[in-house]
Image 1: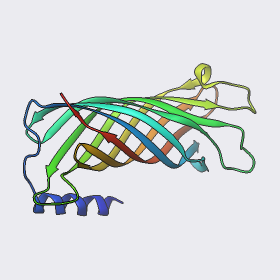
Image 2: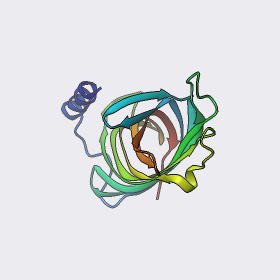
Image 3: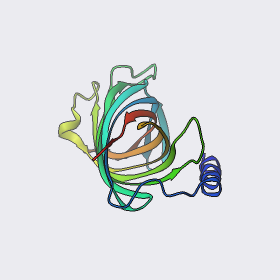
Length: 197
């Protein structure tokens, strides 16, 4: 995946390093996403286990201010709907999250392209509030979860203000009185519409 993103970045940089958005521009981008089979990773003293979840949806919005001609900086929020686990021994528990973050968005305009106006990359870093409902231990995440770091990277395309993104994200959290730390890893396809302010 890293090699693919690097190759895409290199191709865009060599093909069309044109400033796409003027300094001082602002935009709001509401989005809906489809999360493809999230994965809960458990770290129990260095012993890692992975548990697949059902696919789910997300809602979010980003605000960007362009500090340079092709570089946006901003804030955002996304809500990942709870989804149940796919493990045979655990189909009743569910996991979701709400994330608040700061973001960067370098944008490149593609010259004379009939299908895509712009391509961009995303970096997000913030705080994730994880919701983990565990039926076996009768607890709700609101009381027992210790929320933590959230980060994401991705890339997107824009055509006539319609955006489509591919984003990989990770939430870190712990559960009170347990000796494990957890990460929830997600790959999402987002679609939205850019409103210029």
